[in-house]
Image (cartoon, rainbow, N blue to C red):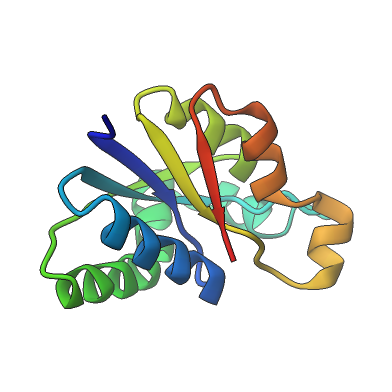
Length: 139
């Protein structure tokens, strides 16, 4: 039985579709939306900027707020409450670590630009291969 669902989200359409799917398929489960701040790019991108902040957690929460606003709106349309959590780190690794406390992960098939996917690799694929729980990849 699926009681706890992790839905990693960024600001992509695929992430929104993953949340929509999770809400429809697992409406009775506790659904947690996770946003990982800290894009792993060749130049360290967002992660380097975050490292310069005085209060990392507050800065991460500010960067996640737009994603969480979208997630709450989608959940409201499904008349469901969700939990939100933000983490700092490498997206795939962080999602895999967090997934241990859940029954399944529902993740969008891709996000970001083609350049990001070429350099970083597909986060969904890494999660699919590395998570200790079943992973549903939504497209």
